[in-house]
Length: 336
Image 1: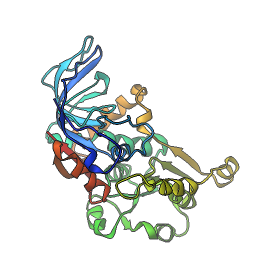
Image 2 (image 1 turned 120 degrees about the vertical axis):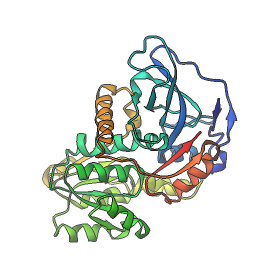
Image 3 (image 1 turned 90 degrees about the vertical axis):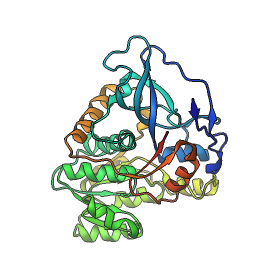
Image 4 (image 1 turned 180 degrees about the vertical axis):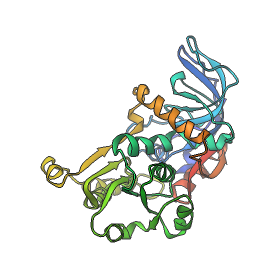
């Protein structure tokens, strides 16, 4: 098979295509002939060496794929070779063959391309867990979505729209028009976020805030919460500056992290959640039904994946650079 491992920590060029033996599915597993694989910021962190859960190089990353079932291990039911599917992969997605547990494999919605199908699992699952499970977003509430032009941000905007929420999204000015087209009510620049949110909410603050930035942003987001507000933190992109590790940047972001105190939470009537989908691989009883719900929304046409750009598998380095430069509006996808 073809695969693109991280050969060592470093810039995008450490992603080097190679040939490797075909993986063999074990009992309970499915092998997928990959047609498209999602690229996530966690992959960038793993490449740089700033993702604690990432495998040490040389290693193949990638959390989500779309394609056809190629082979099955023993005891697998419900899917068959030839079925068109999307799947969550605990690494190994940057390849033209990927093996994962069969319970993480789902039939792909008809009418979507392979690239569109691969854009669904991680981003929409993260957004649904944040908005629906943790924050329990309700109709009429105001949600602030940081990095609203990214994959999770666009997924969150669509899911918030289904709940009839008012949506504020931070992004660079070049992305504001595109965000308006997908239902963001107020697109603002991040540096103006605190002032603009309080102005738009007449001093009340946002009911729900999704923050993947980290560092000082977590503290600012907490300050912007309305009474009974909920902050969901699901990333630390503030630790990245450039294409290599810079420990001063990590230290600065770490030192800027707020220390949430129980009495402060109680007295301010606020809630703070942390979300890491990569630590939920054993929670299949919860992830499976939520994933099926999302796929049904795609089948009904109420959700749609937005692919910013596709790159051939061999050009994974270019895909990483494109994503890390924040050039995307939507999902970055590799194709085989």
